[in-house]
Length: 283
Image (cartoon, rainbow, N blue to C red; front, side, top):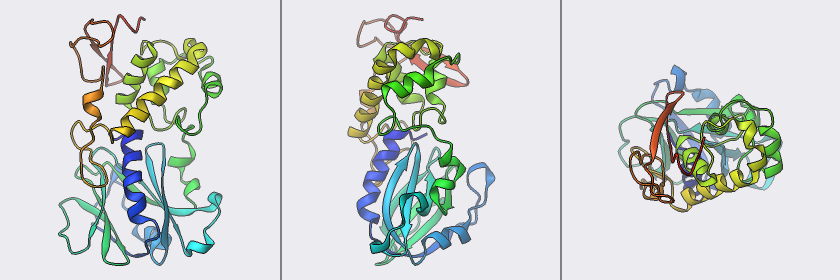
């Protein structure tokens, strides 16, 4: 599933292609998406048709397409309306000429002034496209924790860690505590901070600064290399990311640790693979 760096890469690709573009129509395939929920086409049309895309932003793993009726009279941030999108596991967003044949599994299309279309393609239909009026009121966005790149600092992380008995990996994956982190980048960040993934989160409180620095370095590296493509992810131009080759522990079970030479191990926690170095990340 795309994590913060992949979503940020898509957002940066879409922003120049969508900003200032008027929306003339919305089409839906009629298929339900995430959790078998029907797409609210009426709501999508209400927040987009006749309006202009004024910005494309990321909130955790979500993409917010902010719309306004007039570029010169943009609504204040607290009342911004628009479209919220989650890519799920196989979701893709691209701006293409309207005359281009629609790919299989195209489920939502925004027609743009000038003839282009913004298309949401999702073969497995685990993604999500929903109207927000305002966007901030959507439960999926309202319950997110602070963004590790823009909103979280070491003191805030230390306060959040205090007294938490859950493993640090589970803590970091909890979107209500820290927004945007997923399995790949959490494994990489914990290695960077030399913290064992099963360590109780509360015991990491005094190392909050080092942990946050490792999280940021891992995420920023992923963004610089345009995301991690292991299978399905592509950016807004349809290209795979380059970060897979830079992963130091994730997916490297049995291979030598780049720091100590010991073998990387894999364990399963809550149904997810965890990769770590038992020498560098002592329990």
